[in-house]
Amino acid sequence: MADRPRISAVLCTHNGAAHLESQLRSILAQTRPVDELVISDDASTDGTRALLEAFAAQAPEGLDVLVEFREQALGVTANFEAAMARATGEVIVLCDQDDVWEPGKVEAFGAALGGSGLRLVFTDARLIDDSGSVLPGTLFGNLRVSAAERGAIASGRALDVLLRRNIVTGATAALRAELLAASTPFPASWVHDEWLAVTAAVLGAVELGPEPLTRYRLHGANQIGAPKLTRSTALSRFTQPRGPRNARLLERARALAERFEVDVAVPVQVRHALAEKLQHEIVRSDYPGSRVRRLLPILAEALRGRYRRYGLGVRDMVRDLVQPA
Image (tube, rainbow, N blue to C red):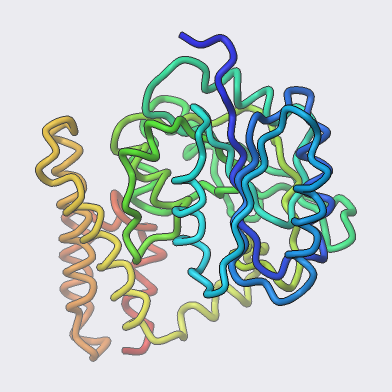
């Protein structure tokens, strides 16, 4: 067992000049420095490239900096997959371009992920605004992560949570390189952090760290953000057409079930749960356009218990009933 694993930070950028310097400074200010910083810029057109070139030229001794500039954008997920493939560390810490790391983040993840195994650790995050001022609440608060969900993860039942919804944000996560090898290639229907988390959960390897280690920036240009869910936002979801969302959920469930359906290393009961999740999304996608005709099949699916086990319960039932086709 290695006492001090090699740690790679993987930073993906796209037009991030406004906040990138703060993130880079916070990486250099760690109590336990990273050994390697892998940066992949996804065809930025602002000052991001110049900032990264200057940073790489002045990087401190002992820090390996690998920078790649893409002329054609891959998108967030494909960019992260390509960047992580270049990392040489035993531990990989995911990094967004606009956040700020707490000084002890790398040290904490290094301690949590020492040794070996297919593991992913994530945490809550403090919130900051565009200028870096601390906002009230936390990332978990915005995502409405419940005490029951935290407890399920702490007791080794992360898959129960993640088959209902994702609560893992990549900017707060780190993983063993072995997990990356087990997770690639990433399906096009999944976001990279969600896929890594659910893969780790299938393999029984998700852990929740006790303290926030990231200041998560909320601003108008987040590529994937976590704004607080307001009453009006929640209500607006019930008026959106259901077709595109349900098609996306079905494709994600299919990709997950197919990835592990013949993997003998995954327990039979886990593979059964993935197949049941897929069946749930197939049924939901096949509901008729008429709201009246949807009622009985929705009730039947509820009686099977699949809304509770693989969705948001009554909330999803109402959503499936009232959304326009």
